[in-house]
Structure formats: structure tokens, C-alpha cells
Amino acid sequence: MEKKDLKPVSVFHYFEEVCQVPRPSKKEEKIRAYLMAFARERGLDCVCDEAGNVLIRKAAIPGMENRKTVVLQSHMDMVCEKNKDTQHDFDTDPIETYIDGEWLKAKGTTLGADNGIGVATELAVLAADDIAHGPLECLFTVDEETGLTGAFALQEGFVGGDILINLDSEDEGELFIGCAGGARTSAEFPFPTEKAPEGSFFFRLTVKGLTGGHSGDDINKGRANANKLLNRFLVQLMGRYDLRLADIDGGNLHNAIPREAYAVAAVPMKDKESVRVDLNVFLAELENEFAKTEPSLAIDLESETPCALVMEQEAMRRFLLAIYAVHNGVYAMSQDIQGLVETSSNLASIKRKGDKLLVVTSQRSSILSQRKDMSQMVRAAFELGGAVCETGDGYPGWKPNPDSPVLRVAIESYQRLFGTAPKVKAIHAGLECGLFLEKYPSLDMVSFGPTLRGVHSPDERMLIPTVEKFWKHLLDVLAHIPAVE
Image 1 (cartoon, rainbow, N blue to C red):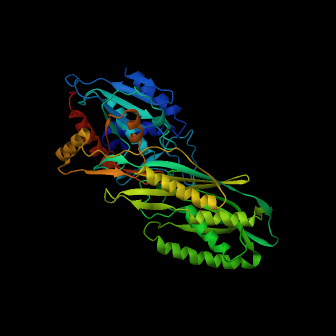
Image 2 (cartoon, rainbow, N blue to C red):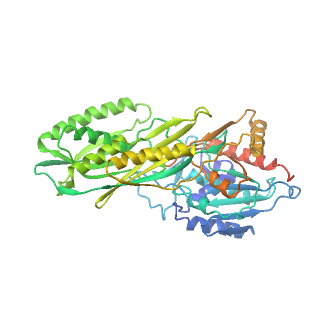
Image 3 (tube, rainbow, N blue to C red):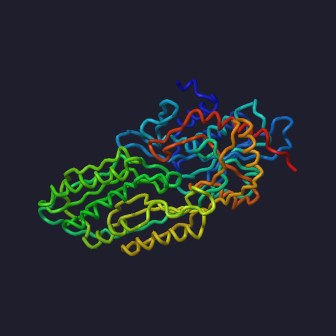
């Protein structure tokens, strides 16, 4: 299969165009300019709000003017993750896509189909002159991935639709009618230093090759967290040797399961070979534990240039034990929807900044009180370790409405097109829909999209055949939107 053969042609055409435009979170000025130029070239009404959200309006085709106005919505920004051996500047370089069997992938980076395919789909609808639809508004929000700031800043009256179709879901054949709310909890540990003991063996310990993934969608898939694995071995060494910590770094994004982490540490020279033996045993244990989910797991131990200063020992002990104790992964499953993760937490990143260690975690739950409890639990572990903690305000969840009129249209459409019923689900990941409901309480919403896997990691890929099914489904839904009562 070649790119020119991809269908639907218009959707993949615009997706390739979107891939040429750099669009990191909080740096959406280039994609925003592209969208506004697109609208101007086609004589479409286009407005931009103070936050940078873009709204493009398209009139109904003749005969469908009385249908309810539909808002198609996606976010402009993408998660910018790359493999360490990949040379790529997300601020300037295009995403290089390629076809691997039935999957579309990127060369060493995130693909950006989350949510570039939603953006491309909206553009294809706006550009078409042979699609049946009523009045349309296409909303493109900013900064969904790092703070939902575009959705937070959306003003009442900016959109005027009755129905919103969010195009940011990742499983074709599934209709989403609810999502988790979330919040970020950060901790600041002191990093006091003292002179490194003489005769120490310094080494760099690197965890790599993990699958990673989305801290909402993938949290229940048994994948390893690089920060947790690194910390686990360091605590093991701390219990056996005179361990000293000189540096530590792991993970990047609050909404990604960390794939890589490293630490620079030291033990007495006499224990050098024992540490290597311990690592071999530890790695064998992990390979057994994560045989299914982490086939490429690797941990390297390399000699490192000695450091003059290391972390003060008691502060190190408290920090490592706090990281060991903090919850990571699924905490509770929904009692209402079978198979849905209700509450979770992700130990997202650990960074040294001078005399501080900064730790970022994210909590999600479909029940606000449980999310608050999870955040408090994380803070408790960190505060016992001597950290100063803060939990942000977070964002609301989207409570499912199984009686939604647009959901009924979407179900009937899918059955008519494909001869089978779609699955109706809620998602543990966060969507902007909860925030939209705060500003527009009467909005009737549903979310669907093509199949994506490995989002928020360089393994991100899009299943090509599902894009055409998603497109056909969306067009049929638009054609059957009810009239204004």
C-alpha cells in the first residue's frame, strides 16, 4: 500500500498536511495560522478567541437549513515524544509518516494522530461540496494535552451548536459518552548535597525499552513504569550497600506512562561486582513479571565519571522510600460500567532542578471524591518523605447520558452501515467534553474516532482501514441529525 492509495483520500490528504505543521502543546501558532488561512481561502466564516481556539462555520446544504447545528471538535496540539536516538525538533520539523502493513506510523516520533486525525477530518468536511449536513461549526481547541487550557478558557457564546461530536476517541466501533476527570499532583523534595565518599564506584543505571503509552487509556494494560522500576532497584541497593545518589531523571509528560529513566549513583568500590550480579537477578525477575507487556525491557549499568557531591543520605532515603510507597497504576474499577477503570494515578516524571527534585503525578477518576482521595493519598506518601506538595484544580469528568439523542442517531447509523451494533462506553482518559458541559450545559455530546494505538509514545500508530469506517459513520450521522423542534 502506498500513501496515494489511502482512503478516504481527502482525510489522509489533510492529515499529511497537518503533519507538516509543527504543533506542540502551548505552541499552536503555526497550526492556528494554517487553519485560519484554510478558512479564508474557502470564504468560510472563521473566528479566534483570546485563548487561541479557532471556530470555522459552514452553512447547511440546501434543504437542510432546519437541522440542529452540529459542532465538530478536535484539538490542535500533539504530544511530542521521540526515541532518544531520533533527531527531531518538534518546534520546526514535520512529522515523517510511513505505512507498515495496515498501520500508519511516524519515524521515531509520536504520529500526532491524537488528535491530528480529528483536525484532518474536520478540514475534509469543510472542504467538501458533496456532503449532506445541516449548519456546522468546527471547533479546534489548543493545549488539550498539557492542561486543557483551550477548553477551560472557552467563553459562553463562542459556539452556537446544539450537538457536539468530539473526534478524539481511539477505538473505531466504540461510542464514548463519558470520561474521567483528572488533576496533577506535584512534589518538591529537597536535594541537599554532601561530599561523595572516597573510593566510590559511580555508575549510570538506565531503564529503557518500555512500551509506555497514555496514562488514561493504557493504565490498565499491565505496562511497566520506568520511574517505578528504577526506584525499585535503587531501594534494593540501598538496603544492601552504602548507596549514594548523584542524579535521577525519568519520564516527561504528566499524561504519558514513562518509558525511560536513569540515575547516577555510587557504592563502595568493593561492592561493584555485587551490584552487577544484583542487576542481572533483578532484570530476570522483571522479564518474568512483564513478559507479555514489555518484550523490549532493558536495564543498562555503565561506569560513570565520579561526582564530587552526592545527595545527603537521609534525604535520599526518605525520597526513595516515598517514591517506592506512592501508588502508581489502577486503584479502583467502576462499579457501574464493567471493565472501566474508575480511579488511577501515574508517576509521570522525576527531574532534578538544582537543589530540588521535582516529581509530577496525575490522578484520574470518574468520581470527583475518589479523584480527590487519590490525590490526597499521593500527597501523603510524598509529604512523609519530606516533600512540599501541590494538587492543581484539575478538570471535570463527563457524566454519561445513555438517553442522549445524538447517541441514538450514532448507534442507528452504525448498525445501518455495518450491520452490527457499536459498543457504548465511557473512557478513563480525559476529554474536553466535561469542560464544554460546564460552559454549555444543554450540549448533547458523543465522541468517536478511528483506531489508534500507542498514543503519547513513538509507537503511536493509526489503523488505516478504520479511518474510512469512521469517515463513513460520521457523514451518515451528519446526514441524519434531527431538525430543530
